[in-house]
Image (cartoon, rainbow, N blue to C red; front, side, top):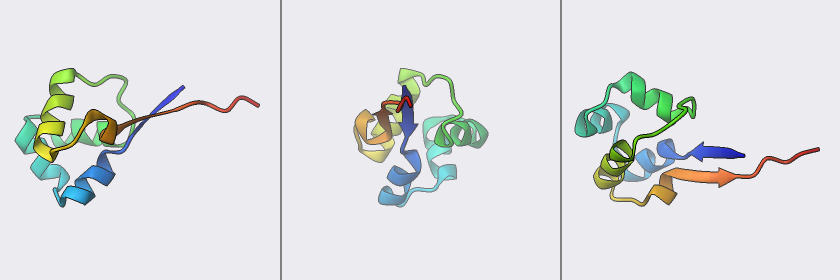
Length: 71
């Protein structure tokens, strides 16, 4: 199972910089970068709520489930 993070796409659609989003939601740019690159192991609902509120989007616009293909 893989959860993909489409935060870069939403930032581009909304024309918002990573720095602006990090400042607006109260997290460091480094932590936002970890989330954007998919290296985060978890996301707090409060963080996801703040991101969705600032970008005017739904959680499904940012998070995507992709089933692993087993060979």
